[in-house]
Structures are given as C-alpha cells and as structure tokens.
Length: 166
Image (cartoon, rainbow, N blue to C red; front, side):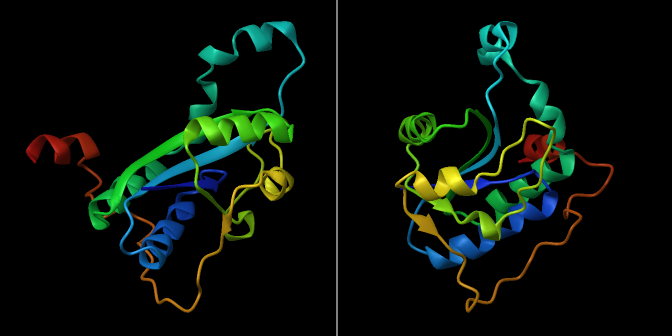
C-alpha cells in the first residue's frame, strides 16, 4: 500500500493527477492525502486552538469533494482520499507529519496547483525537497483521460443520494 501526499490549493482540477498516478502504479493499492501548508502562528490563542481548527475546510469546494468521490469510483485501487492541513514551516515538523501519516511518496509540487489560500499559506517546494521522502513525477508518456470539470453526478443529485442508492 502506497500513501501519496499531494500538495494543493484545492482547485477542482487538482484531482486529475490521480488518474495519472493510478496508471503509473497499476498494481498498487493507493491512499492519497491532499494537503495545504500554512505557517504556524506565533499567537498563543492560535496555538492553543490548533487541534480544533476547521475553518480552513471552507477553502475546499463541493466540486473538489465531488471530483475526489468520482476518482474513487473510477479507480478501484484507491483505498482512501484524505484532505488535510499542515501547520508549520520547519523540516523537522514536516518529517514528523509525514512519518505519522505513513506517507511513502510525495507528488512533485510542480505537477500540482499550489496557490495561496490566504496570507499564512506557504510554498511546499522547499519542505518537500528537504523531507527525505521520495518525490514522484507524473509520467507524461502515459495517456490519461482527464475527468470533466463537472462531475457525472447530476446537479440535482448529491453524493449522499448516490451512496444511499448503492
């Protein structure tokens, strides 16, 4: 089982890299972690409430969630897709996170949409480069059919409706 970390700004097209990775690793069971990185605040109140933060999830659109669900339905080798946020700016903190999350590879940030979500967003490139975890690139020689920007789910249906029918 491989766990691949994908730095992102949660643009709905960011999910398209999953198809390429699944084709590159056809015999592997895969977990994906989409992550955005924020510098750690130095305010005491922010530090005390860090474990209870959930306001960053407002940056993740329903379209992004829909695309993730569509990928899981399209590629049976995907066991999980997670959305997480990393707070910190040191290599040591990032390595600890990677070890605790069981990350085996990181998608090269140059293949990702990694724009800033707010003023505390940081560029993942340097942390990824210094992490010591293998960096995977997308093989551009493998043909991949990108998913449409809209999901195949009708606008009036939700993912929950589809799952309830299953």
